[in-house]
Image (cartoon, rainbow, N blue to C red; front, side, top):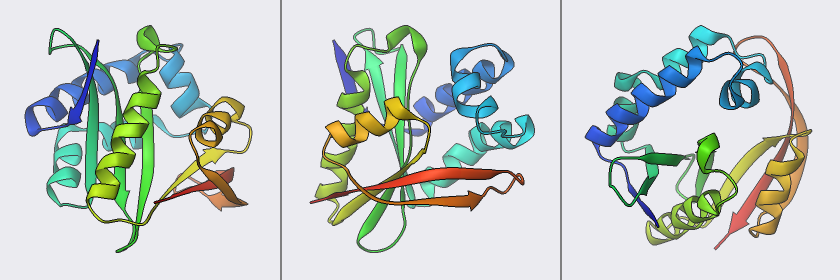
Length: 171
């Protein structure tokens, strides 16, 4: 059984520890799929996952973190993060299910919970970006009601060009 809920500060601290540990395994699936694939410098990724940065982001009111936890109430299985873009729009910035818990519907549950909470907060749409070549991610969003709105290339802050596909979910 999986429980999905809004993250509190204590859980964000634990999530930060897990993410920073994952970054140490350069051959691991999460590192390869989320850091190496996009050419993200390690220091940039580390900074994004520092405890104080996660807490600052959530406590600013601009971001929300949603956690998938096991029955034991201690095992974090994955998370989703949304960021407010304007009064009508929230961006699903990331959704990550840890490798040992994939293919069990956890990503779908996280997405559904994030969408429900976003709608309750009065937003009209959710946008998400996926790499143009991320076929699995793109199918996941399409299967869950997101509509493709554009393809574009962005210059990432770390100097690499990324080909992205933007999707939108409307309430």
